[in-house]
Amino acid sequence: MIALTLAALVLLQQQSLERRVAGAPDGSVRFSFAAKPGVYGNGRNMISWDCDKGNCHNRQVDGNWDDRNDWDSPCDSGPVRVALTKSGGRITDLRVYVGGEWRASTSATDLGTVSTKDAASYLLALALKDESRASEKAIFPAVLADSVTIWPDLLKIAKADNVSRKVKRSAVFWLGQAAGDAATRGLTDLVDDGSADHEVRETAVFALSQRPHEEGVPALIRIVKENKDPDLRRKAIFWLGQSDDPRALSLFEELLTRP
Image 1 (cartoon, rainbow, N blue to C red):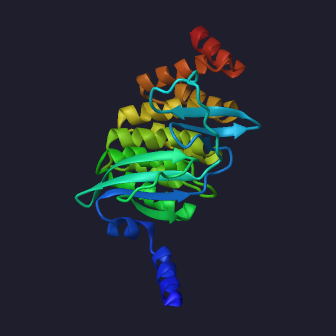
Image 2: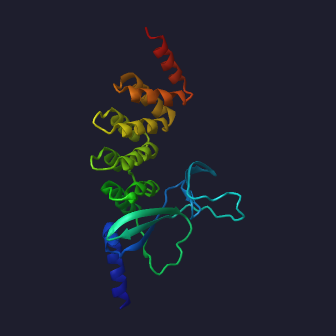
Image 3: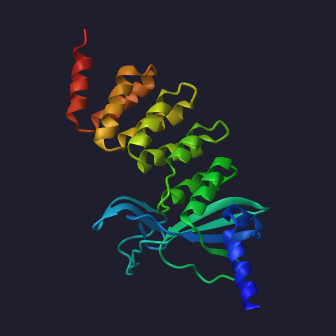
């Protein structure tokens, strides 16, 4: 009997996360997965990433919590915890946490710990479906997954014709944060794509401004010099002006002294 139960458990774990979520009843559906290095959270309302030796370059805080409150929350390096809201068989909302523990619940369906590959694949597929507000939110936890490369999927979402502007902009933003040279190439291609949504292309210009200077500044300079869209050129010039990079000053001098 025990062997049969264990076999059933292994078979369940081998099913794709998408099938397991589809088979869960309406209500809250939970799963967890490993966070990549440099990701920390208090298990509640704060998630930080790009952390090294106690310094975090990026942080997201939800809610009206005040650091002066007389309580302290530990900062954990994982796991990433996702809570889906399922209604009528559809995923209608999503919440993400890092660290902490799930509260005991008699109604939530807990799928346990899943592989980061399965989690990222499921979340990015959810974003690409663009069926609810969960789609835009699904990209962030996928970015936090350990040992997965997601920038090709983000680029696919950013270029998809059947995806809303909000989901596209989220994909473009995280594309700019997620990968080095490969992401920069993808972003410049998106800026150059005249058939893409203009606001999405503007977001790609902003994403390039967030890349390390050795990647982002040359790409922005090329946009100023070569792109035919005057709005995109102005956006690139604005972000170059915030860079404090000598190459940007040289470009401005060139533009201002041009006969």
